[in-house]
Length: 309
Image (tube, rainbow, N blue to C red; front, top):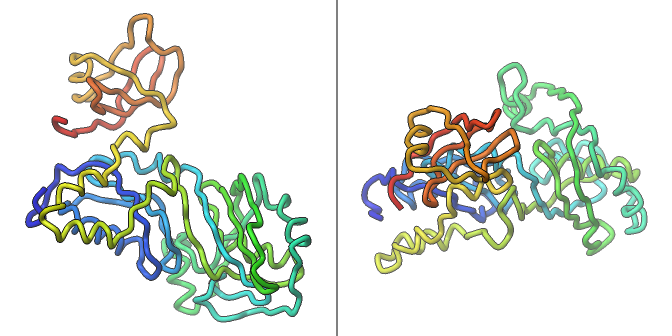
């Protein structure tokens, strides 16, 4: 692919290993420049102080972002005991302190209480909108931000190690909308101390795992090496990777054309699905449309224009 002009035929997912210090928006901008494309978006913000997985959709893959965004997340994070901050991480000022340091046994004893569906109050410094404004913008302007507790799901919360009395390392698998910084804050309070996140790394999002991540500097190196520019295509995961959790239906060429034009198709034959709900259609291995199966018909909701493979 040419790196001198925009290439709007690039479609797929880049599972970026975002470095510390870069915003998610900056990361998307960097990937757009590397792949020479103008259409891109990420599947879930990662704070500048956090590192790790930031799935970035290019081209037609942007139509599948919600399916990745709604998937489970895997994080590894370090909590420092004894201080709570305005941001619940190292960026903020200390607002409460404690001399108590919990033992590993005390920490283990509270973990079950943070698993399952729990109520969590997001950090004041978060992207949640309050009267049309981002909470972090209001907080930075010195305004008091009061956010309501909301239900989130923690599938797993494990203590990995306690390197010293002041710190503990955890891993958690959680659902959409969970704030790890708030989890650290609330664990500190439950343990009779205070706590904030000092390190945060995301290791999984939806269908993507740790082994899928690609460092930004590696992609930049390929982009600036004419002999290796073709390797960029190999770094892209297929658009349909985001749809791993929903059924795939093979359709004929005639039905593919109907779906592309926004028309529903009747699913016939002995292999016709008996379920109802989300599904995606392929024709000769190519993604055609994403839609809903209702009463034996597939109704397209999103149509893909991927060109010939």
